[in-house]
Image 1 (cartoon, protein in one colour):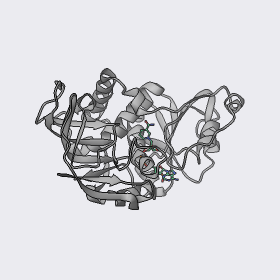
Image 2 (cartoon, helix red, strand yellow):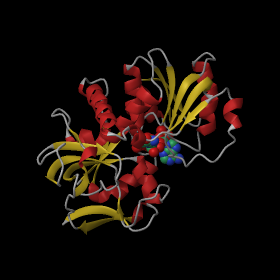
Image 3 (cartoon, protein in one colour):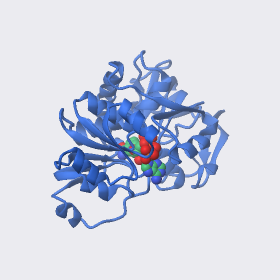
Image 4 (cartoon, helix red, strand yellow):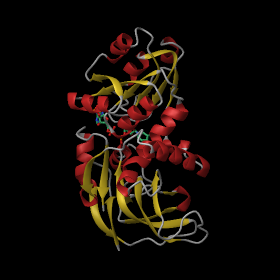
Length: 324
Ligand code: NDP
């Protein structure tokens, strides 16, 4: 047997139960991973509440983990028993002491990267990679706007963008978070509630920004559009405050021929080559010290509900790891 945090219905953190589950056998193309650390991500909240739907209930939450391969099923050659591995993305099921997962979703961990760091960074760090290297290729000298700048993805984005020579305007909700974002590369930090577009206008001397990375969703969507220069790119990549409601497409035209994308890590790491290249880029910036992964909270996996409470109450900064 192994242990897992499962939900039998959608709802608040109280629906999460620490249960005995049979240890699964790896099928063809699959590997059994014994987790040393599991990542906490905002997407876990969406799956718990039902904003995003699991294929069936009961479901084991979680999209990210790091550990050791215990066994492999037929036809697996990418990893072998004893390998240190990590992963991010579906299928859900990471909140468990052990799980099976398609072996082609695993990447081998460099020795220098601990399980805890890996579980903290695979999902948030690969997301930062695609956002600033591929959704929009951030260039030296650009000024960009980053919401939730002291959060998991946020702190990585701030450091990586600075490393690329860009100037970051971060948005956070408290003075302490502002200090943290500044310490991780944000040059300007706006503390909400703020008139974000007016502040961006002042900071950029009227030029506005070429790209906004908005993970807050409903509460900030319009302010983000108003912060863009003509033909700028709105990257709406999360819904921490709720999903963006339907809106008139003409708004994009009226505000200056804006571009809008709603990207997901899954579609940027859909094939093995993209997954490996994304992870390698992340390992390189973390290995060089250009990006430091901040594990600012650790919870026992059995107490994952408390971690959800903290995340939703905006009490966390940087990354959070759950230890089985
Ligand atoms: P964070 O650590 O960034 O936590 C969420 C933060 O959002 C909070 O700390 C808070 O920061 C801010 N926030 C603003 N409004 C609210 C609100 N009403 N309720 C709760 N939080 C709010 O989480 P992650 O780093 O795990 O994820 C960041 C975002 O990126 C999430 O929206 C997530 O869904 C998205 N994401 C998207 C991916 C994709 O591929 N599309 C992949 C990975 C993450 P503050 O208090 O400073 O406002």
